Amino acid sequence: AGAGIGGVRYLQTVIPVNIKELFSHPPQLNSLVTARGHIKSIRHFKKVGFIDLSDGSHYRNMNVVLSSPDSTLSALNLKVGQSVSVTGQWVESKGAQKYEISYSPDDPNQELRIIGNVTESYPIQKKSHTLQFLRNVPTLRHRTSTLASVLRLRSFAETKLIEFFNAHNFIKVSPPIITSSDCEGAGEQFVVESNKKSSSAGVHPSFFGGKTYLTVSTQLHLEVLAASLNRVWTLTPCFRAEDSNTNRHLSEFWMLEAEYCYVDKLSELTDFTEDLIRYVTTSLVDQNQNSVSGASLDLLAARYKKEDKAALQRRWETILVPHRWPSVTYENAIGIINEHKPRGKADKALEWGDDISTEQEKWIAGEHFKSPVFITDYPASQKPFYMKRSEKYDPAKPTVACYDLLLPEIGELVGGSLREHNYEQLAQNMDLLHMNKEDMDWYLSTRIEGSVPHGGFGLGFERLISFLSALENVKDTIPFPRVPESCPC
Ligand code: 4AD
Image 1 (tube, rainbow, N blue to C red):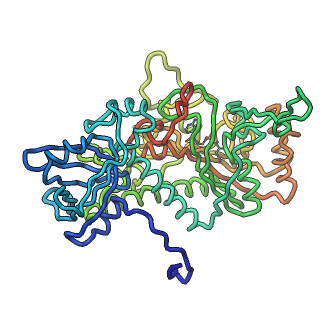
Image 2: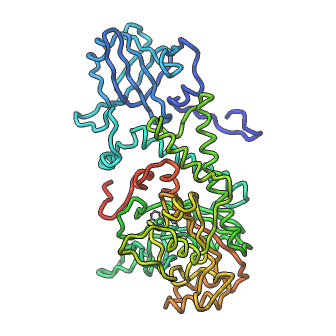
């Protein structure tokens, strides 16, 4: 046991040093160091050779200099993709990196050893591959600097979410993935089918004793927990059997959901949503500005040099506009679209009650407001049963106190609302949609046992990462994308 942080004792575990740690805590010059990773490229000149080694911990590769390239390369038959371990001398580098490892086979204390070989068809080579090609090699694509950096970005964003919610005294909770209800009421659930082993031959009762599904949103359970814990949040897988193969949809995606009590104005929710997304983005900008002091573009890889880096910067600036994000009602939004958005001959003007299309969403955020924009107070007919009526409620045009956050180039990123906390009104909403109230009695009970006003939202995590990383397709922002007709591993 070692000395503790802040007086707390902890066990000192030792794990092998990785390449990021070698860069961030450089060993003494000329000492012997060991690095392990995959070979990304091999360069062979007359008197010297180079191996680029990557272990994914950092966007930079470790440069290994071979002082006798002929004998080393031929003796070992080194190839791109092999995992290797190299023990050599830690020396200053003449190249872009400050340090590198020099390997000489003549020194008995040094060693270059193949840990794992590759087949002739190892697909990841030094040339850059298209993202589409990489989707066909799901077990190897994260060895590329681009996709590894996106996963590092995901991990970074998660830590920033935790910081933000902690700072606002939210409790992180773990709602269930298996559920008996359809939160969004859109009938897009995957059914969980499993039978119980039964002793009496031929009888296989359903495992849970009733119909169960993979959750489409954990909101209903978060509402229950918020009523006990005041403010809760989660980042959880959600599943939707939507047959849409677009660059914004996944069958399995991760949703950030937050729910809190005693909120009674929609603007409180939209302000909170904006602050959250600004916090993650500002943290990202700060982290990347560290590159000046040498700590580097740790999160985003070499892909984002030059023009790409400028594109990234523009995206982040879109989020960090120096004014609060605009908020317009659905009614005003369709007015703006009808008045200003160029329409093809076949396009009809939007009428009250019509859906705003993805193309129109992207236009209003990207072209009209040139910033993220909240659209509020949608027609009740377009939204689920749990939403509260709008503050200014017109029975001729019934709307609900909800919002969608639209981002340029992405469209919808967040959906949220005030929740109906009055039992009679909620029951009426359910009756109108012919929902079975008995199946939902657990949820309805929260409205008769000390009901409190509350609200919350859900944010598609892959869509956020896609926007922040400027990778257009959400399939490249999740390690193993599940989409219709594709679940290869
Ligand atoms: O607007 P949605 O359907 O809202 C809800 O599910 C609420 N119950 C959330 C809440 O209030 N707690 O989904 C929220 C967000 C969308 O804005 C979108 O970003 C993302 O989830 N999303 C998807 N992301 C990837 N693939 C899909 N198939 C998605 N469906 C929704």
